[in-house]
Image (cartoon, rainbow over all chains, first blue to last red; front, side, top):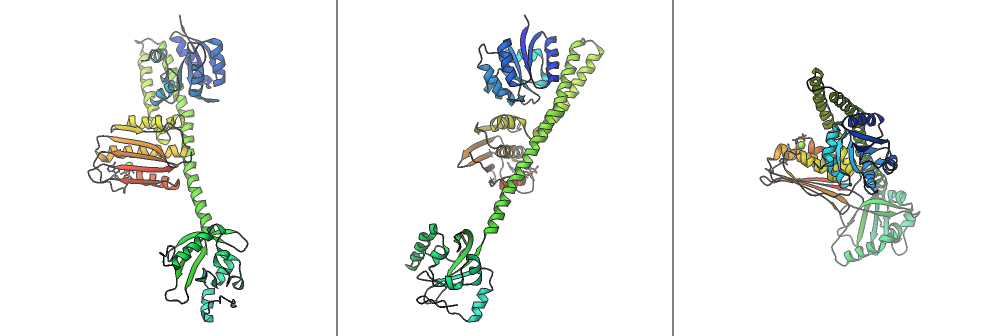
Length: 119
Length: 341
Ligand SMILES: Nc1ncnc2c1ncn2[C@@H]1O[C@H](COP(=O)(O)OP(=O)(O)OP(=O)(O)O)[C@@H](O)[C@H]1O
Ligand SMILES: [Mg+2]
């Protein structure tokens, strides 16, 4: 069965491309959200396995949203993403209870699998 | 000048009075009993008393704010009893009291006239309100300049990020989608792979540029992750011995970051060191940053623009930069950045 993902980014262009890219690699994109508040509502409604979460959201930091998602039940896996791709953002993401971090430009289904399986 | 019944004004030749009245500075003299015996024209203008009002009056009551009077009288008494002349013959800054009750900053020097009988103390003093205001303004404006420059750098970084970098990311995703749709043997596949590699290079260059202007990870996560990033990129192995996780004002974080960045660059360029150690800790209202290396030492500390620029930045924020670099024993750069937290 396809793995389910919710894409959270305020940039509609990125959401559309990420959807295409992940769909081509066998992911099922169950929803999209444009900010942190919407992300929390949609995650509770859709129960995706994974939330792909932008670091800079119009209503605050993705790091805070990641923490709040981790506290929901059942908690989805959260992978943070950003146009920044500093290595340190991995640690920063993990410190805030996200599973990991993928730079937007390197986004792919395979890369997400790698982060989720801790590679 | 009139004479007071029991403490007469200093009797001076009229020419000498004229000389003292022409002075820009206040000249005030008092006897051992603390009474004023001379009060020149500048003193009259500055404190708001006429000579008639001042001469014969108790100097402390007249010119010293109530909160400082006891200390002043103690000092005079101790001196007359043979104690060390704590405040005599050197420049001091203190608060004065005007006739209307207002207080103001003065600088003064007090001398005891040698051989004068009876005892005579003479104070030369001036109102330094304007200078104090100018100093405070200068200090505030220097801080504002540093903060404005930092804010501009953050803005440029953000514009690069939201603009060009964002577009390059979209382009990368589009190319990768296209690449996914053509088979490996296809002629276009090689072209797309080349385009992607080229794009990687452009993205990396732009990222370096943006990071040099202002590191996003500093804004995002504070000093700890930002310094870890610097340490990871350093050509010489770096031990981050201690770095607070707390957040500080943007200009404080930026200053600490640029100190470590410049110091580590210098270690790699000049020190021939095996390793460098970074310590950042909060101490008495300041963030103290120390970068040590075990290299050759002997840095003259002049010639380059790196340390000079840091020195200016720290001075503007009211902080200090110091370097110890004994020959053969390595170099330590230490910055103290005032931070209210
Ligand atoms: N860690 C160090 N070990 C030995 N010498 C040092 C060290 N740091 C600085 N120096 C000496 O101090 C000088 C001044 O350093 P500064 O950073 O101001 O200038 P620079 O590195 O030469 O040039 P710039 O920083 O402008 O590119 C250096 O040229 C070097 O001789
Ligand atoms: Mg240098």
